[in-house]
Length: 157
Length: 257
Image (cartoon, rainbow over all chains, first blue to last red; front, top):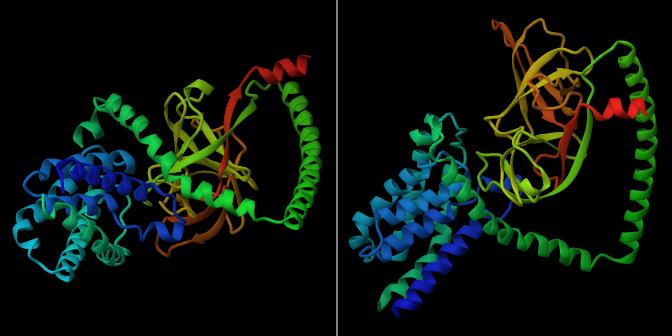
């Protein structure tokens, strides 16, 4: 893969994550929507940890702050915290099997949901512990698509 | 986070980013619009005729109701003038379309396609065909952001239509629920009571339907009752909304004419 095609894939995945995050859903399904921005952030950190790290995660969190309408910096801090985990484990994660990485994403999504609920409660925003496991499960189920794409893109580069 | 919560330093930056993100909302709504267009493409003549018939009947009913309302409004106006009442409002409305909704259930906001160029202002009330939806919290040139009455940070002064009992309806982050807190356990409120905006706080005009009481919970040992209200407006379904412009002088001018 050339540098430009990696850049194109990067832009396309970010744009797709943004659109998937914003597509209006019926009330019943909105609670089940995984955090696509976080998944893409974690994916790029795992497979491109030499060039993307906590600053990238923080900037993605800032974007999430603007689209979620949360206090500026809240998701920035959350994404930076959550992004730090795959960054420090990226050396191992790339040698994991796909199933193991799905398991890792499940745990990471649970951690993210718990932390976001704690942060939200500090800011007196509504919290919801009911859907944590469902969202984490859906995140880990859609992870293989992103995993295959990003591992292919970053393989030769 | 602290700068956001305790100062207004970040406001200009946030406004710029809010405006920049709107095209993404428009793109994200494309599949929904395409789905509607596709469904319309395959709706047959019979369905369209049935819908047309239904709409004609509804229109007839509404026109009848408006005539009755016009009589009542005129009578109300005359009585108010006899009493030398000063607070009279005539509300003008502007139709607007929802172009985006908040992607998270924790925040109940929506983006509409009217902005500063249409004289929209912060604090302006938003209605749908059934009742009050919320208010404008941020205005840009060609779009605005509205906060729904069900958002957990929103509260609206209301009164019970039956007896005028005043209270404040707070959002709960549930699209189908508002709550009234700190109502005395002896307050005269019961299931099915209609709530309308009271006009206190001078943010929402008085008399617009807000919701219907669905549960009254007089907890034992508590000084207050917990009242649950179902919003009248179709908070998560309405596509076309109304922006309300209030004016104090038009009514007097009309009466004098």
